[in-house]
Amino acid sequence: MIRSFYSFLVPGQIVSHPQCPEWGAGQVQSVVENRVTVNFEHKGKVLVDISRIDLDVISSPDL
Image (tube, rainbow, N blue to C red; front, side, top):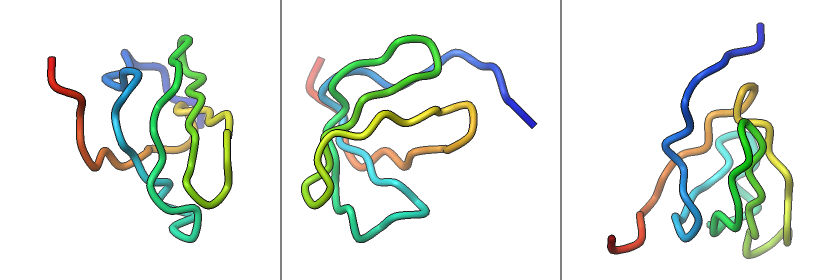
């Protein structure tokens, strides 16, 4: 099942991947529709399809 929704993720947020906790915390680099580029501390840059994976938000940048 593919979900379609408005993304609440923004560049600068710190997230974790629920299925890959060994990747550590990651910083959101860019958000384009349902594609989010995240730079994880132990994996590097990963393109995540958020229509399939719900990233867990750890913290948000000060707005």
